[in-house]
Length: 435
Image (cartoon, rainbow, N blue to C red; front, side):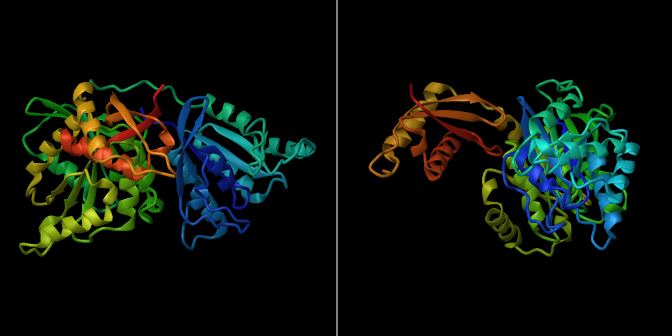
């Protein structure tokens, strides 16, 4: 099961973005006093009492030229579609017609709703929250997003409504992969091409997680599961009208995958949204393969593929470890190169390195290329050990962890990558002080 999702819903200028920033612990949303200033739909990860969850700031849902109330309504409906629990934010100034409109939509959703009244900055203001009982969602929680007051009580209530996590239904040796990318890059055609050849399709399992359909199948004795995101199904005009809604669906598929295929449109080339979606897979520590689809439609000479690959390496510098596969789902040309790449990336994602061999490589590299001095102090590397897989994670014990500059961390990561077979997977390095 993936992480549960919390949507923050409410009319403009009630402080949704401020609350979002408090919950995720970073200033991701743009916060201004001007209503509707959040220009992009924002996703983050929150944590409360060791429980992790997605957070959506619906202030970023831009419906274009929709009238004010219609825009609020559509934002709420999108959040409802995606969320397990909804935080309905109001402002202590009182209940408005827009609040009542959102309340009607939330009632129809049958999703758990936790009512928050924002801008209650001191105890004397609590007397102003009682009008909000009229919205019919039970006890309103007085909070102050700008000061962080009352958020603990609010999140206590939110996590009570999370669905139970039933764990991974598949065996460890099953390779789970998903396809992410902008709409119309050919993800569903690629799935059909993979399944359309001589394969043993076990059965499609609907509802393994909300918002996804899993298709297990077997090729040459290896079991795979394609995690099909909702992006492959028609979801109404609101979803069709913008690329932003593909992001959360991609996130949910990424969480449950061993390998993520970042699908690009060979005809259209690289777009900013491609990089944003790929970034989520990288941050999640999944094995990644970049797939350039529709390669049949590209006019080619002997340099076309190399030039496109150089462009990918330039635009996706954070994915320097990801192999690139060029193919056509439509003609099935080069489709046979994809599953071997998936299997290779999955194996490397789960690879363990023996500590003695790892230390030999790391200590030799550190001796040959010592870290530069910083204000008279120099980083000393004592030993390293691999602590986990998926992604392969290494703890490097040093004299002072704060002396580990990101450039030296990158040097150590590249050293490990060159010494061992880690194509297709990110590597994580943690610096710790030797005790």
